[in-house]
Structures are given as C-alpha cells and as structure tokens.
Image 1: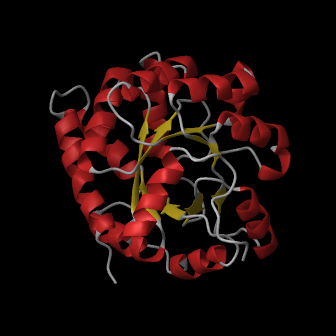
Image 2 (image 1 turned 45 degrees about the horizontal axis):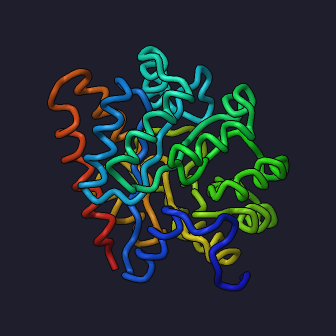
Length: 278
C-alpha cells in the first residue's frame, strides 16, 4: 500500500470533508441529482436543503443527450434537464449561486463530450472559479487523461475515478494511484438504477481496492433505501445514492412540496450512513 497521504489535488472541500469524517469515525453520504431537473432553481434549493440535512458531498449530473452509464431513471432526469434549458455553463452558474450560501462539496458527474465541446482547459478553469470541487468523467479512461489530470491538479480540483466489479487487480492499482478526493466503486455491473439487494461481492471488492490506496472509497450504483445504505456504509468510506433520490424528484415534479419531501427522504439516508452497523 502506498504511504498514507491524500493524493492528487490540493486540499479542497472534498478532501477536508473526508478527513473530518475519518477523524470522527463516520462515513460520508454522497447524494446525486440531475442538474436542472426539473429546473436549476430547484437544483439550488435541493443543494441547500441537502446541506442542512447533513449530506457530505453533492454530485450534480450535467445533462447529456447520450448518458450511456445511466439507467432509465437518470436518463429521464437528463432529458428533463435538457428540456429545462440546462447547459454546462448554466450548471456552473447554479454552482456559483449555491456557493453564496453553502460550502457543501460539489462534484460534477458528466461525459467527456461536454468537456471536449466546451474545451477541457476552459471548462476546468470555469468549474474551479464557480466553486466546483471535483469532476467525475464517466467515459474518460485514466490511461488517456494525462492532460486532464494536469489541468485538474493545477486548478485544485479532484479527478475522481470509477472502479468496477470487473476491473482487474493490476488496473485497480493504476486507477488508485491516479485518483484524488475519493474513489467511486461501482458495486454492480451495468448502468445506474435502484436495486432490491446489495451485491454479495461488495465487501470483498472494497477490501481489494483498499489494498492499493489510502483514499476513501465511496460505493454506489443500486443503493435504494436506508437499510441498504447502512450495510454499504459498514464496508465503504461513503455511500452514493442517486436513482432513488432522482425518482422522488420525478414523482413530485413541479410540486411546491418537492424540496421538502426529497430532503426528508435524504435525511433518513444520511442518518443511516452516519451510523452504520458495526
């Protein structure tokens, strides 16, 4: 295992949050929502409500027309985001508005086509200026990311990488060596989406990743309720919940109760993760 240190980016809100949680023996709750679903004002309001509910990291999905890593729930959220006029530039404007009232760590979850279209160096610089803390680029292999990683490090942003159940041991080691902020372990093969059970291999796979890094490991893809979140938190350093939250946003649509109802659901998940089973 490499020496105990925080890899990659300069200290930012993601690293500070995980350091604080580790020092207190707690785990992180990471909430994913689609930016602009149903509109960016609701996205801002949800971010503030999540911060008040104890969410440790907020992942904002930047809407894209061909979200290959996402299941139906998050695909539809991306469609709603595009329909509301959400663009990468408008997502960054929304982050800047959130930053006026909140220091919640923010990760943008996006596809490389969006960075390429805007310009990788320009997007990273603007993201840092807006108050983004890290990027998770779904379809950019670490082996092809030297320029991206250099730009991210120079901007003080964390480049967050995925590890899948099918990732071989030697590649886990390479990904772990390049990661910063935290590693995202995809606990199931396939796309995002709610599941009725937790993968039996989850604990063993997380242990395999730990052999290669001191970075926190957040586990996602399929976590749907508080009991599952509590179980996952006992194995990982953090739990990512997306589709279950996005589904509730879809259920409430344009209702004035949307933010309060979704925040209450998230609050139960936060409590489960902050108090995992022994």
